[in-house]
Image (tube, rainbow, N blue to C red):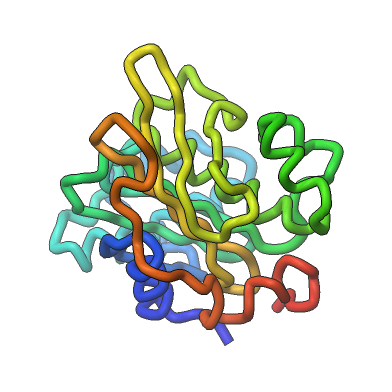
Length: 240
């Protein structure tokens, strides 16, 4: 049974302390419903597998924009985006939105199926993070991959950064804080990972303020109770 959007929103609100709107799409949008601008973007896409993923993402985005009372034409939507983020994994696309003025960006990532191999961990985890997770199961790397992906997407000026630049303060925490240090000052983030749709979903938000992480923490976050306990997803016992 798939997780409901309302349940995911509730869990993210609990963990992040700010409302996040969620839209899930399993079916691609009908190309006949696309705007002229969207059709131009569609014509530029190849191969076919990418087209289906893009159409599924448009379906999620259009439903999200409709729920926000906005124009459903996504042709001018660009990422990274201060209010919107989008992720695809397998046969699912998820779009999220936040209108919290205290956040400067939002990011989301969903991973269904197997995550990155342990050999690739150094490509997205910093040395301190690698030492912290040395004793945990390799499958947990999937959650950390989604954390880093969501953090990267939440930074609207991410072009000159890489995943290893985003320092997760407690890599073992399913919800917590992260920091990106730069010459202009630290950017702080709050993230939360939950079990959803047979995989792991992480949402992250970036603070407008510069300073210490954790300035605006959410409530107690269990990370489970959506579609399966997170521990089952991470150890591979639940792959619906």
